[in-house]
Length: 96
Image (cartoon, rainbow, N blue to C red):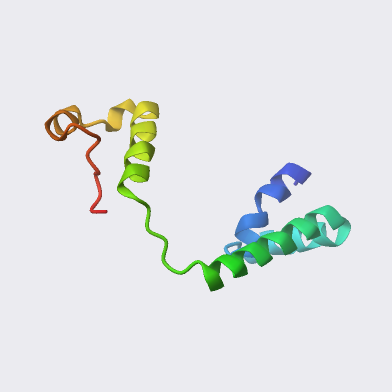
């Protein structure tokens, strides 16, 4: 497994979402790479800070509309033109 593949596993490793075999490989790479170990430590710290202090985060309607417009622009097959036209804006496809 190359360095890029291991680096892609840092997030799942921090979230404890890796099977045992991959976890062992990542841990071996951590022992060999101070930079990778620093990345893991940083992600753990950020995860804990967000978990402790963020509370519930609710996106504004304006943010959700901008995000959905971007998603629909990149994924034309998901658009719902009749709803967009009726509402004069991007319709939220989920109950947010």
